[in-house]
Image (tube, rainbow, N blue to C red; front, side, top):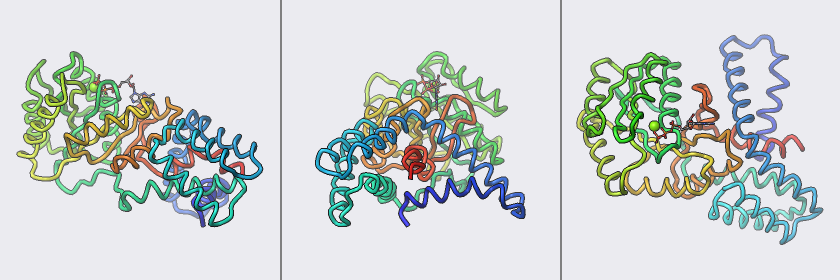
Length: 346
Ligand SMILES: Nc1nc2c(ncn2[C@@H]2O[C@H](COP(=O)(O)OP(=O)(O)OP(=O)(O)O)[C@@H](O)[C@H]2O)c(=O)[nH]1
Ligand SMILES: [Mg+2]
């Protein structure tokens, strides 16, 4: 069964079935409700992207009776405009051309099915065992959060803290952004709201020294997870590299275990986000990406571009400004959110 049909069965059939089955255990029902809510969030947040993507694809497939060279050119344009990235787009168009010849597919609707299948497979081919959740294999686990100015680092930290609090983990925060005035106050507001411990430095204090104090405090208060906020902007790349290296060194001295490092990317910045990721990848070992503001972008294809060009998994996504507008990245839900109009249309 192709992914297109799989998604249709998984998400549409489920909606019909939930009311019918009365004998399912409470935990399973709760899990189903949770899954449905999560799917709704994806669906809602990806509305703009869907309009920009599925609606255009739908219109395209209605304009062409059979596919031809112009059809594939237009399809290519739609993928580029959705910010799927040039490399991803060219690869997928080539694959689609091959498949359409091999299987003799001429109906644009069938091409749409193939397209969704290929989007899925291309995402997965980079790494089959994607583990989005943080694994608490050592205590405390340290998560370093990096990214350029204003992408949503601090908000995402609050969301991650809340996410793991709900899973029963003790979380503490470290405000190692001593560069921007007001940064620690912003994180403190979140820490107070979440009722969690925070370690702050003084203005212009060495971030690595704040990180050191924060890790010590987190170990002392028995935290499961310590999240370190960093400054987004330094005068130049060398400074940023030196600072991140120093912070990492200090953390590793205290915690003799691999640390998580999430790069935050603003989903509304399109290909610029991909460039940022490439620049950061050169200076630090990124273990995951969080894409924020997916609710505000029509360029939802950025997730596919990042995967294709960097091979780093998107671990979580931000779907709004509130604490709960945050979800573990799920490829099925994402593709459903991006393509559901095509799937419903079937
Ligand atoms: N709609 C929407 N807004 C978001 C999301 N994540 C963050 N924001 C908003 O983006 C703005 C910047 O967020 P911050 O968390 O302050 O960003 P930052 O990267 O910490 O910024 P600096 O510390 O200045 O580098 C805020 O207004 C947030 O509410 C999201 O997923 N959706
Ligand atoms: Mg910040």
